[in-house]
Length: 377
Ligand code: PLP
Image 1 (spheres, rainbow, N blue to C red):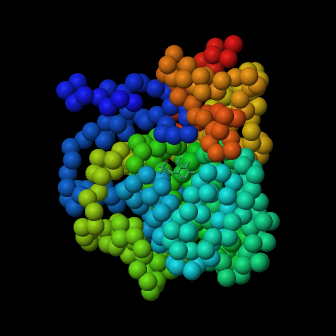
Image 2: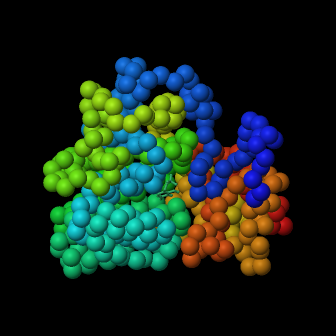
Image 3: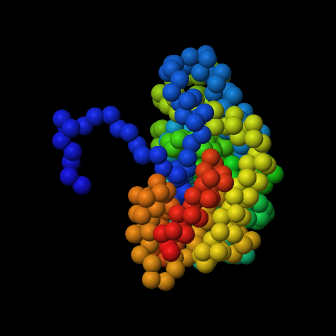
């Protein structure tokens, strides 16, 4: 792309799209309005009150009583690093389950935290195999942590977070869990499943703008981090420092919080509360079923078996002889509809059709089916 000349640049007006890719999803106008409210100081008592409410709302979202539940400033990847840099000390053995792109990133995070990853691979499109996790823990009794992705966005597959956490705890290991695509779209029960360090993202099933990552840490995880003898290698993400801003009401300066982004998340979480989590999960399932019925008629096959299929992330195999990139381009140009391409070994083989958050509504399903039907005809 040629660099635009400075004198031709004016205000940016984005096109209006229906976002049915792997994220971001569409944002409720209420959230956008909240984000345009006046900036106040991030240490202002009014802002501190809003932060306390946001923590309560996020605890509801995660279904947890964990005091340390807050949104870290930065996208889901920052939430991921936040968990790994704090939970993994140099030399720690971490069992990492990889059944898609984001499990691969967890391995990177373990290595960069100077930990030792023990990698368990599963086929892309299939859930993490609990038997392999059990075997790995038996072979590596010194493993401190098991890390896995609950909802793999690259494959549309859900793993059994409750069972994996049970196995890990049986062997006295803690769990780090990625819920970037699951939170708000299907059950994430942090306390009931006894998850230790959990991160998510705002731009998927929470219908909020990208750029924040809700995280929650169990008392056991906080205890580990606060007792670490060595310094956490990232200053920005060190929980011991963040605790002074998000953890208590004294609020000492850590970094300038993204004030308006946090207004947006507060409003998005108020909307989750108003709808009710169970209703939000049911809405994602309902529209997924409608989409599936339409895909069946169009002859599009799902990649993931029904029992592990995520309602919010639908992977379908591209029919023979179709130029998949040209189809996506036509959907974007002619219908203002974004769907996602495959990643890694699935690149060129699948489309990823998201039904997340505000996008999980009947208008999106109807648009997607009619647009795809017309482009593929
Ligand atoms: N984990 C999963 C499962 C994701 O789907 C994503 C993003 O799509 C991330 C982590 C990283 O989030 P972000 O792109 O907001 O940094």
